[in-house]
Amino acid sequence: MFALMKAKYILFTLAIILALSCLLHILPNQNPALLAASRYLFIGAALFYVIKKPSLTAAILFCMVLGIEIGYDFPQVAKPLKVFSDIFLRLIKTIIAPLLFSTLVVGIAGHSNIKQVGRMGLKAILYFEIVTTLALVIGLFAINISGAGYGLKTIEVATEVTAKANKIIEQKQSHDVILDIFPENFAKSIVENQVLQVVVFSILFGIALALIKDEDKKRPILKFAEGLSEVMFKFTDLVMYLAPLAGGGAIAYAVATMGIESLQALFKLVATLYIALIGFVLLVLVPIGLIVKLPFKKFIQAISEPVSLAFATASSEAALPKALENMENMGIPRKVVAFVLPTGYSFNLDGTTLYLSLASVFVAQACGVELTLIQQITMCLTLMLTSKGVAGVRGASFLILVTTVASMGLDPQKAFAILAIDALMDMARTSVNVVGNCLATYVVAKWEKEI
Image (cartoon, rainbow, N blue to C red; front, side, top):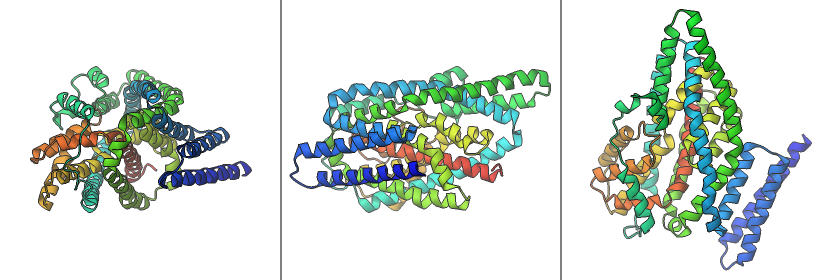
């Protein structure tokens, strides 16, 4: 109890130092040395808290704060730190396919039945479509109220940003929503990080294994899958030691390369997105949680690590292994977690769909085009189709945005400006994606009467 009280006192002190530092930075004509001292004081106090109450979430958040400071004060030092994030994401990618394969095979062939897999699939898709539609509507509502794009008709796009945008567009590949669900080669799906294809193969493999009646033939494969699953969870725990460095390096690089000027020019868009995402969580996800009687305290504890990872690295993949582990530890059966969570990564991108609707109207506003309600609804229907199944595609959100605005006769060059601050927006939308998918897992488990 005493240790807990001490932790609360430290957190209270941290909040005071942060408030004072923010106040100093807002006030005009302040001494730069004083501003820097206030930031360093906060970092020192945060380090003291991490030492006193160590946890993965606290370490990630501290390294993020440290990364922001390094990126702001020492941009040339910050840029090479991205290597930590790259190493971490590479290791995470090695975990995802074997972890999904083993958990799904064990869940379907060992503990589930084929009819239940079909039921879960239908319930999950229905839930995904309802929630992502609400996300699109909230995005449209938010950008129409804020009007963040008006007055930006002559916004300058940096040369390096244009080059980056063109590079992403050049690698655009044809995307067939239905066809791309099914793998043509399992190894190829792993190499290209096609999570949904890995899920489909694993489900079919699990069903085939469940249909085998001869226990002598079935048991060795099931035992192998069970062993592989346990090993991959231990592998995840080892890789998580790199998570704080990965988060700090990613944030430091983003701050160093983003530039304060681009943030100032597009601050209203960033603020609109963050407020809209918070509104989505409060108006949609929280009521859903109340309806299904979600144990909020337990749920928040379970998602704190995956969400902090997602925010720091702006990658849903980084959060997936830990999310799988924590949701199972929360009491949700493995067969539900392994099926719903990775499927949601392709069909339930709440934060991304909200961002796409918001950003598309922003581009129209920047072009000086007033979209009618019918046009905005048509755009939403287009986004609902084009945003599915592209979670593993690099630059997918930007590609969808450019394609959508171009199909409406708008200048896609206006979308290039958004790319300058995309890292900051990606952190928020990716975090909401993870929260939404973790909640979806609980909802489907509740519908299946598994919890």
